[in-house]
Image (cartoon, rainbow, N blue to C red; front, side, top):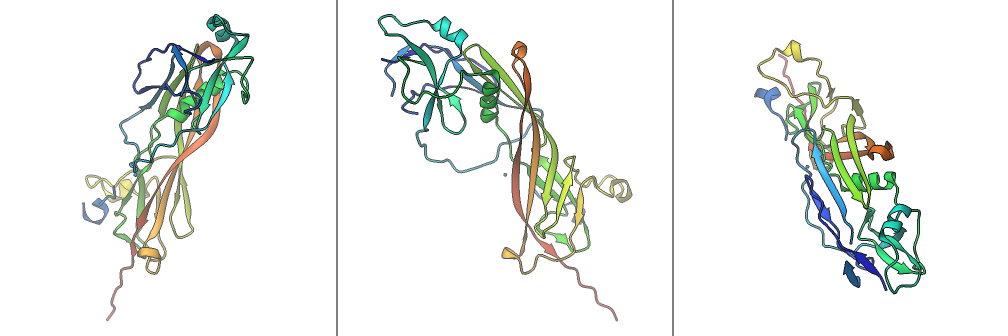
Length: 282
């Protein structure tokens, strides 16, 4: 028999409690372009994500049909095993978290007499909880901006590149039993693939053209590019302009320590129409 411990909701900026059982497992430059268990009784698993350094929106997307996630079993850490104890009337066994889906988000711990088939992995650790926090974070896609806007770019005319969103530190927290870990993802570069085989790397989000400032005061821009050829003849008569923001990810679990996780990235792609101005000479 498996028993699930009673759960309590932990509140935060955005919190979710998982109750799934293991089996359920201005002129040209002024124009800017705008992405089923058994008995239930137990402890809380809380995720809190999406705290952003400044306002930004998550990328829009169509809702996907729910598919039950695949789950594996991970032993509860020894200290919590001792707290949970041995259920009355049960043969010896251990408590396990069911870890479900790609996000590695655990559901409520369950007791398995003699250990279940398929129980895998070490006890939950601070770094694994940090990875859960990262998986729960609301990471926005970058929002591409250009001056001129992406419908009016010109050959041999400087293009300003900037982000209208998606360049802010992101924090998220996950709690599993007694372990709580918080991650902070900080952007450090944006790589622009211009669509014509050129790649530009900027260590800042760039800036939009300000019609109230002089041209000379704003040029060269902090991040920019000049197209040498028009996009005529490309699919849709446009280059595919992609901005990819890269983040360093640090985590802390208070007295339990901290560290870094692998870098992550988010991207957006938009069509960029590049025209050519013809001049006539007498």
